[in-house]
Length: 111
Image (cartoon, rainbow, N blue to C red):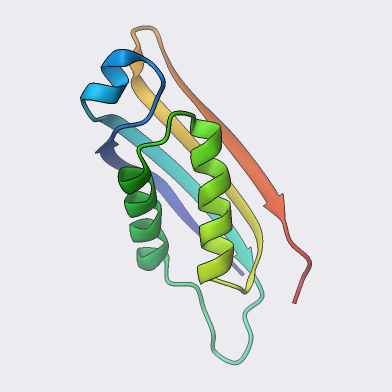
C-alpha cells in the first residue's frame, strides 16, 4: 500500500541565509510512503502531514537535508509499518527564476 501527500504548503524558517532566519518562507513538501498493510492497520495521511509541518516549523532547520533526515526518522518511528519513505522539500520563493529544494528516498526492511 502507498499513501501520498502532494503540495503540503506552509510557512516556516528554513535556510542558512540571514533573511531566511528572520522571516518564515513558503515551504512545499511532497511525501510518498509505502507500507505493509496488515490486520486493518493503515497510515493516516492527515497525521503524517501534521507531523511534517510541526517538525519543520518547530526545528527551524538550517539545511533542507537535515530536515529531510529528521522527517524520515520521525515518520519511521511514529509509523513503523513504513517500508519506503520518499520526501521532497521545495522552497518556491527563494530564487526569482526557479524552485529549489532537495529530496530523499529511504528503504527499510519489510516487516
